[in-house]
Image 1 (tube, rainbow, N blue to C red):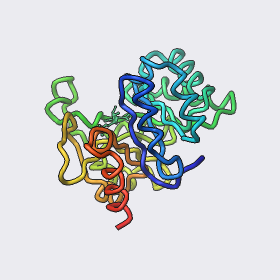
Image 2 (image 1 turned 180 degrees about the vertical axis):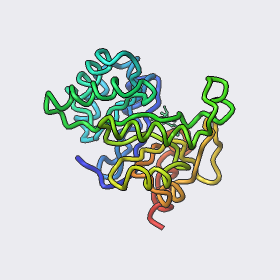
Image 3 (image 1 turned 135 degrees about the vertical axis):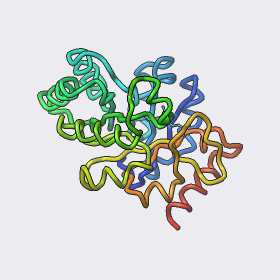
Image 4 (image 1 turned 90 degrees about the horizontal axis):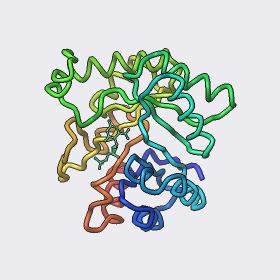
Length: 232
Ligand SMILES: O=C(O)c1cc(=O)[nH]c(=O)n1[C@@H]1O[C@H](COP(=O)(O)O)[C@@H](O)[C@H]1O
């Protein structure tokens, strides 16, 4: 089932049972779901089958970053499991992203292929420590332009950069933005955050939300509040 909602709920749980317990409370017409490193490492492809069986479109977030041939094979494997979206790290470079694109095209796989620019957990200080002397916004713009030239369908960035990327890469280029925090929520390990409504106003095409919903005392009312913020 394809959802018109921009919401992607991050099922960051340590077991298949815990993830499905949350998924069973969600409506595939009202959101998509994301499977990340912890859950996939524990459950393997079973989780994808279970979520697809429940009608969800799945973003498989394994952030591939390796030599071009290895990433192309991994992206093909993900797409052949029927996921809606898969991601790689843009910092893997042009040849890596082009190899992933070419592999999906060669096999007529329509999975959305996006590239992570600068993790939303990183600040300017974190970037400087790994040898990137420019601001997060500048590095995001550089990597988003490279991702677009390399055939990506969009990028993962912080909503703080979405407006600049709309100007740089256009409306249709996907801007998938984690680091979404309702005004009252804790930032946790995120550094570049925005509220759901501000993120949409800034030009995000999809919002990735994890802990503000999954760790809430009442996840369904947290989700309802988020939806009404977006509707309002
Ligand atoms: O690719 C991602 O999904 C991702 C990229 C990024 O830059 N920052 C980021 O937080 N994420 C993921 O988005 C989710 C955010 O979760 P919360 O911080 O709990 O809302 C996590 O599953 C992260 O792995």
